[in-house]
Length: 219
Image (cartoon, rainbow, N blue to C red):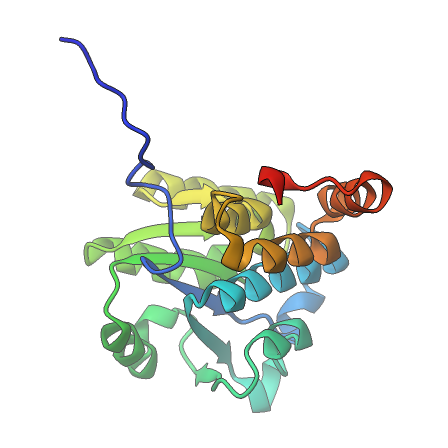
Protein backbone atom coordinates (compact mmCIF):
# COMPACT_ATOMS: atom_id res chain seq x y z
CA UNK A 1 0.00 0.00 0.00
CA UNK A 2 1.37 3.40 -1.00
CA UNK A 3 0.70 6.30 1.33
CA UNK A 4 -0.02 9.77 -0.02
CA UNK A 5 1.24 12.68 2.05
CA UNK A 6 -0.83 15.84 2.40
CA UNK A 7 0.17 19.27 3.71
CA UNK A 8 -2.17 19.06 6.70
CA UNK A 9 -1.48 19.05 10.46
CA UNK A 10 -1.74 15.92 12.57
CA UNK A 11 -4.96 15.53 14.53
CA UNK A 12 -3.09 15.43 17.85
CA UNK A 13 -1.67 18.93 17.36
CA UNK A 14 -3.54 21.55 19.36
CA UNK A 15 -5.08 24.70 17.90
CA UNK A 16 -6.37 27.86 19.59
CA UNK A 17 -10.01 26.83 19.22
CA UNK A 18 -9.95 23.10 20.00
CA UNK A 19 -9.21 23.00 23.73
CA UNK A 20 -9.70 24.43 27.21
CA UNK A 21 -6.60 25.53 29.13
CA UNK A 22 -6.73 24.95 32.90
CA UNK A 23 -4.41 27.05 35.08
CA UNK A 24 -4.62 25.50 38.52
CA UNK A 25 -3.47 26.75 41.93
CA UNK A 26 -0.62 29.04 40.91
CA UNK A 27 -0.66 30.43 44.45
CA UNK A 28 2.06 31.49 46.85
CA UNK A 29 1.46 28.81 49.50
CA UNK A 30 1.69 26.12 46.82
CA UNK A 31 4.80 27.70 45.30
CA UNK A 32 6.68 27.91 48.62
CA UNK A 33 6.96 24.12 48.79
CA UNK A 34 7.60 23.57 45.08
CA UNK A 35 11.15 22.18 44.69
CA UNK A 36 11.13 20.41 41.31
CA UNK A 37 11.53 23.69 39.38
CA UNK A 38 13.04 27.06 40.31
CA UNK A 39 10.39 29.61 41.31
CA UNK A 40 11.55 32.14 38.72
CA UNK A 41 11.37 29.58 35.89
CA UNK A 42 7.95 28.40 37.06
CA UNK A 43 6.63 31.97 37.04
CA UNK A 44 8.23 32.61 33.66
CA UNK A 45 6.62 29.55 32.08
CA UNK A 46 3.26 30.28 33.69
CA UNK A 47 3.42 33.78 32.25
CA UNK A 48 4.37 32.48 28.80
CA UNK A 49 1.42 30.10 28.51
CA UNK A 50 -0.98 32.65 30.02
CA UNK A 51 0.06 35.36 27.58
CA UNK A 52 -0.08 32.90 24.69
CA UNK A 53 -3.58 31.72 25.64
CA UNK A 54 -4.78 35.30 25.93
CA UNK A 55 -3.23 36.26 22.59
CA UNK A 56 -4.84 33.36 20.74
CA UNK A 57 -8.19 33.62 22.51
CA UNK A 58 -7.97 30.17 24.08
CA UNK A 59 -10.85 29.24 26.39
CA UNK A 60 -9.19 29.30 29.82
CA UNK A 61 -10.33 28.27 33.29
CA UNK A 62 -8.53 29.81 36.27
CA UNK A 63 -8.95 28.00 39.56
CA UNK A 64 -7.57 28.36 43.07
CA UNK A 65 -7.86 26.34 46.27
CA UNK A 66 -8.68 28.01 49.62
CA UNK A 67 -7.51 31.38 48.30
CA UNK A 68 -8.66 33.48 51.25
CA UNK A 69 -8.01 31.06 54.10
CA UNK A 70 -4.73 29.35 53.22
CA UNK A 71 -3.13 29.31 49.76
CA UNK A 72 -3.10 33.00 48.82
CA UNK A 73 -3.68 34.81 45.52
CA UNK A 74 -3.00 33.61 41.99
CA UNK A 75 0.35 34.70 40.50
CA UNK A 76 0.23 38.28 39.19
CA UNK A 77 1.62 37.09 35.84
CA UNK A 78 -1.55 35.08 35.28
CA UNK A 79 -4.00 37.68 36.58
CA UNK A 80 -2.42 40.28 34.30
CA UNK A 81 -3.01 38.07 31.26
CA UNK A 82 -6.71 37.65 32.12
CA UNK A 83 -7.80 40.95 33.68
CA UNK A 84 -11.18 40.72 35.33
CA UNK A 85 -11.62 36.98 34.82
CA UNK A 86 -13.06 35.19 37.83
CA UNK A 87 -10.94 32.74 39.80
CA UNK A 88 -12.99 29.64 40.60
CA UNK A 89 -12.06 28.92 44.21
CA UNK A 90 -12.44 25.36 45.49
CA UNK A 91 -12.17 23.27 48.61
CA UNK A 92 -11.47 20.06 46.67
CA UNK A 93 -7.88 19.17 45.86
CA UNK A 94 -9.18 17.60 42.64
CA UNK A 95 -10.44 20.37 40.36
CA UNK A 96 -12.64 17.88 38.52
CA UNK A 97 -14.70 17.28 41.69
CA UNK A 98 -15.74 20.95 41.89
CA UNK A 99 -19.25 21.61 40.56
CA UNK A 100 -18.53 25.20 39.44
CA UNK A 101 -15.51 24.09 37.41
CA UNK A 102 -17.44 21.28 35.74
CA UNK A 103 -20.28 23.67 34.94
CA UNK A 104 -17.76 25.88 33.14
CA UNK A 105 -16.26 22.91 31.27
CA UNK A 106 -19.71 21.92 30.05
CA UNK A 107 -20.57 25.51 29.13
CA UNK A 108 -17.45 25.82 26.96
CA UNK A 109 -18.04 22.38 25.51
CA UNK A 110 -14.64 21.20 24.27
CA UNK A 111 -13.30 17.66 24.65
CA UNK A 112 -9.57 18.47 24.48
CA UNK A 113 -8.10 19.79 27.74
CA UNK A 114 -4.65 21.21 28.54
CA UNK A 115 -3.53 21.46 32.18
CA UNK A 116 -0.81 23.33 34.07
CA UNK A 117 -0.41 24.21 37.74
CA UNK A 118 0.71 23.22 41.22
CA UNK A 119 1.29 20.54 42.43
CA UNK A 120 1.73 18.02 39.62
CA UNK A 121 1.04 14.94 41.73
CA UNK A 122 -2.19 16.27 43.25
CA UNK A 123 -3.75 19.22 41.44
CA UNK A 124 -2.83 18.01 37.94
CA UNK A 125 -3.02 14.22 38.29
CA UNK A 126 -6.45 14.42 39.91
CA UNK A 127 -8.35 16.22 37.13
CA UNK A 128 -6.45 14.48 34.34
CA UNK A 129 -7.21 11.01 35.73
CA UNK A 130 -10.84 12.00 36.22
CA UNK A 131 -11.27 13.66 32.81
CA UNK A 132 -9.65 10.76 30.96
CA UNK A 133 -12.08 8.39 32.69
CA UNK A 134 -14.89 10.47 31.20
CA UNK A 135 -13.47 10.35 27.67
CA UNK A 136 -11.66 13.70 27.45
CA UNK A 137 -8.40 14.12 25.52
CA UNK A 138 -5.83 15.48 28.00
CA UNK A 139 -2.47 17.24 27.71
CA UNK A 140 -0.25 18.77 30.41
CA UNK A 141 2.47 21.42 30.21
CA UNK A 142 5.21 19.70 32.19
CA UNK A 143 7.59 22.63 32.67
CA UNK A 144 4.75 24.88 33.86
CA UNK A 145 3.94 22.39 36.64
CA UNK A 146 5.88 21.78 39.83
CA UNK A 147 5.89 19.60 42.92
CA UNK A 148 7.45 19.18 46.34
CA UNK A 149 10.37 17.22 44.84
CA UNK A 150 11.74 16.20 41.48
CA UNK A 151 10.70 12.64 42.31
CA UNK A 152 7.10 13.68 42.97
CA UNK A 153 6.91 15.63 39.71
CA UNK A 154 8.47 12.90 37.58
CA UNK A 155 6.32 10.11 39.02
CA UNK A 156 3.22 12.24 38.45
CA UNK A 157 4.22 12.86 34.83
CA UNK A 158 4.82 9.13 34.32
CA UNK A 159 1.45 8.28 35.83
CA UNK A 160 -0.39 10.74 33.60
CA UNK A 161 1.40 9.49 30.48
CA UNK A 162 0.46 5.91 31.42
CA UNK A 163 -3.16 7.06 31.67
CA UNK A 164 -2.92 8.49 28.15
CA UNK A 165 -2.20 12.19 28.75
CA UNK A 166 0.27 13.91 26.42
CA UNK A 167 3.15 15.97 27.86
CA UNK A 168 4.33 19.22 26.31
CA UNK A 169 6.35 22.30 27.32
CA UNK A 170 5.44 25.97 27.69
CA UNK A 171 7.27 27.19 24.60
CA UNK A 172 5.99 24.22 22.61
CA UNK A 173 2.44 25.15 23.64
CA UNK A 174 2.74 28.66 22.23
CA UNK A 175 4.52 27.63 19.04
CA UNK A 176 1.96 24.88 18.41
CA UNK A 177 -0.78 27.51 18.62
CA UNK A 178 1.09 29.65 16.06
CA UNK A 179 2.39 26.75 13.94
CA UNK A 180 2.85 28.83 10.78
CA UNK A 181 4.78 32.11 10.65
CA UNK A 182 2.57 33.16 7.74
CA UNK A 183 -0.27 33.66 10.24
CA UNK A 184 0.35 37.38 10.30
CA UNK A 185 -2.45 38.24 12.73
CA UNK A 186 -0.61 36.60 15.64
CA UNK A 187 2.99 36.89 14.41
CA UNK A 188 3.88 40.05 16.34
CA UNK A 189 2.19 38.86 19.51
CA UNK A 190 3.87 35.45 19.42
CA UNK A 191 7.36 36.83 18.80
CA UNK A 192 6.75 39.55 21.40
CA UNK A 193 5.81 36.97 24.04
CA UNK A 194 8.83 34.87 23.06
CA UNK A 195 11.17 37.86 23.38
CA UNK A 196 9.96 38.55 26.92
CA UNK A 197 9.35 35.03 28.27
CA UNK A 198 11.10 32.69 25.82
CA UNK A 199 14.53 32.57 27.46
CA UNK A 200 17.42 32.03 25.04
CA UNK A 201 15.03 31.72 22.10
CA UNK A 202 13.67 35.18 22.93
CA UNK A 203 17.19 36.60 23.10
CA UNK A 204 17.86 35.13 19.66
CA UNK A 205 14.78 36.81 18.20
CA UNK A 206 15.81 40.15 19.68
CA UNK A 207 19.35 39.76 18.36
CA UNK A 208 18.29 38.79 14.85
CA UNK A 209 15.75 41.58 14.52
CA UNK A 210 18.08 44.21 15.98
CA UNK A 211 21.27 43.27 14.15
CA UNK A 212 19.99 42.52 10.65
CA UNK A 213 16.22 42.84 10.60
CA UNK A 214 15.62 39.10 10.30
CA UNK A 215 12.19 37.55 10.71
CA UNK A 216 10.53 34.18 10.46
CA UNK A 217 8.55 33.50 7.32
CA UNK A 218 9.78 36.62 5.54
CA UNK A 219 7.86 39.10 7.74
